Length: 489
Image 1 (cartoon, rainbow, N blue to C red):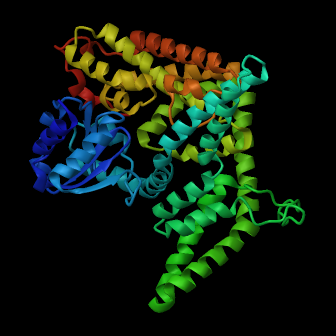
Image 2 (cartoon, rainbow, N blue to C red; image 1 turned 45 degrees about the vertical axis):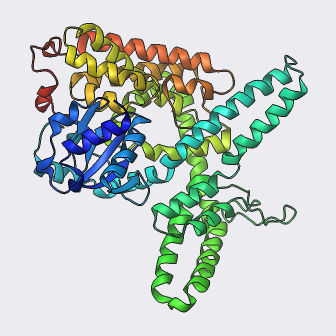
Image 3 (cartoon, rainbow, N blue to C red; image 1 turned 30 degrees about the vertical axis):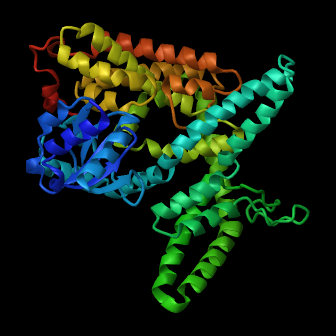
């Protein structure tokens, strides 16, 4: 079945084109807003080739995995003539609650609404963060891998292993391509932040560019109001850009209300840039620089001082963050570490959460081999789990099985403990995890990362095999995945 056929079948089971209001492309799933929920056939949706799970919430979530979801969502929008969006662009999608995911077969709407209301502001915040950074993930992955190849070649040139003029020129080209993202990252973040905060994207890009202080004379630098030292280009980094563009959005939208239409484009843009620029240079950059340095220092201390213990805690509790949709709030910390240290030493530890879940999935395949319906789901979700996309395994397998989710977290903690004990395992970019992160590991520490992955796989397998699988899941005769309603997280 090709993607157009999948899309057509999904549309039929959603109640037809007339029942679809909006289709949103997420990295791993298709989000659909319908007119009449009663027309949707959930059970038939689950049978469509390529559908790993269906999550019922305010928006219907059809989990299909990376790549496939993007293609199918576009086909669905084209076939149904419905509104099409990419997650984070022109919308404020809220992350699902734990009850939505743990009890996706339940239709207790009152509990769902209460759970959403309880954390609505924080969920909106995390959705905004996702809207800013998710569109940049392909750029991070591509530029990061290209930069990693360049680093390997440069090391070989430095060691004298390679002396070819062609390879030397190739490294220069690779660095130019890589720096197309990393040298101007704050500009891209400024544009996306302005889009998310409903401000002018061009102005957001300019505010992001101000952070580089390109117009400042190095011989006569401005003064940091906190330290009294010369103000440094890039100080405050991504945190400063986010704060500055948020303030800019408030100023711009307020000016739109009071400036006459005939003068709006001239006066509003000028005053917005002037006010925000002054605040950014003399207040936000020093303050955000202090906050950024503090966050990086605390993160480094937790990883370096805590060692294996910190690694276990971080690895074990990352899956719940992914489940609640809160993992995006760590993205600014990753990027700040990359800007200041050349790598994020937090990401490889957090990636072990996915390793624990992969180990748990393998244990299910072994122990529940007689349960064909369950093992087929695992086989569909496992490959992308190995590549670092954990949502299909979370929503379709470990969370519905209850105890399996907990043992998968423990497996992630074991992998994190190993990475923490080995120390100084960093990644040059964000985006992928699992085995896909190996090319991005810096300073030749990829073997330490692989050892951590294997520990996570083994830990998740052993703990899940002996403690994480209820007997009812071992054969098709049991209650199987339909019994998730009796699990309370």
